[in-house]
Length: 317
Image (cartoon, rainbow, N blue to C red; front, side, top):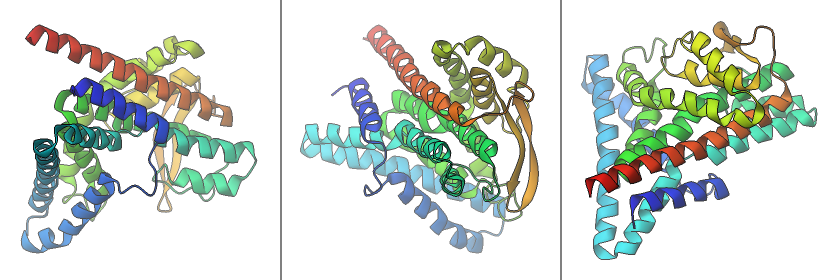
């Protein structure tokens, strides 16, 4: 089966099923493997940054190799089973439905005026303290998560899948998981997580710059495309991350709200750059719109990337 059809089926499965909690997920296994390497590598290699680089090489290399080996061995025995395994691996790499489900749960809790539940639910989406958040802060956190994860949970895996198939998709998920595991700017991971953070920035550089215009186009039905373009051009590079600010600024413009501002992480207040319309605070209803824009972005990304692949493959033949 052609890779293009495998990706279409895998994306359809993601949209229909999401991420069932009972299904063993490769990302969880990658995360456990990465975490298991930290202590022995720190103990064996005295240069902490070098130890982190070795961790990156081991995790990415083994993930990509195992993906290739599993699919190749199964395909050798029974080719249709190899196609099925490829589809399942691709399916696990896409997270549009799961992201939408998390944001929808927060939205429903806020609509039911259940603030404690909304705080707990949004804590699953963001790495910040949520115990004292009010409704506006919860809505803002959920929207920011949807915007940021439109890159690393939707557009980037699709792009890597179109370019590199299941092995490319899993390589990207390994890079993203390494950043989630080690890529923190604190005393423990400043050196050990350096390679993980830098590689994640590199892997997301092109996807982030594709996500922003796709978000602008996706916002067209809600009349936010022009605003998204304007805000992204003005505010997209205010963020400390070279990638996250573009999607967040585009989403802020699409919704006509202001994102960023004060956050609390580990009890320490931090000030994030302000993106979007000054003083226009996000409301609960904006979560639903952000979800819709993100899902349209996913379909647009799939259409554009697959059309490009079909065209390139046709020229090569």
